[in-house]
Length: 198
Image (cartoon, rainbow, N blue to C red; front, side):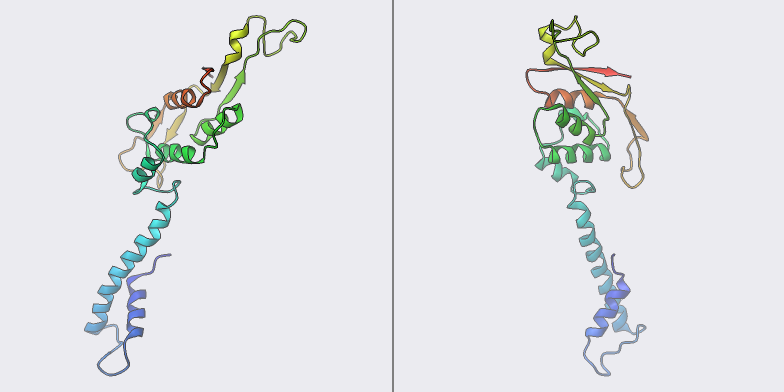
């Protein structure tokens, strides 16, 4: 919690030497001068406390461009004018991504970006092994083993959040362009993602 200028004034008055030349009455000129000094110290204290928020990519605002530069952002997938919340989500997803090519890792990465998805894989139908109604149907040939389906809501809506969003951002933005671009970017090179919206 930040300290007030009066807190610093009291501390500075307590540091004065003893004697009639150093009055501690808050109405004296010396005390008012120390209140002005305390005002500057309180501003520095508040800035130092705010720096704790800037050290965390989930809460950063002023240092967000520096965090993005370190993480290799902005990504072309983010679009021309993403919101502060979307930029933070992309930054956190990039910094915490474990890497890998499993369905669980891709799903977790997309969840960190704010998308709730289900991913299904296709398997070619094999006589004697596959049964009727199995995920691999008779229409799935060998090429379908390289395809996976990403099931997501038709439109993912991101709303303006006081305290998180910045002034000038839209009250709501929607679309799945970032979802598709990010999925294609992290998908294994030999696979083809398809998107199913409900």
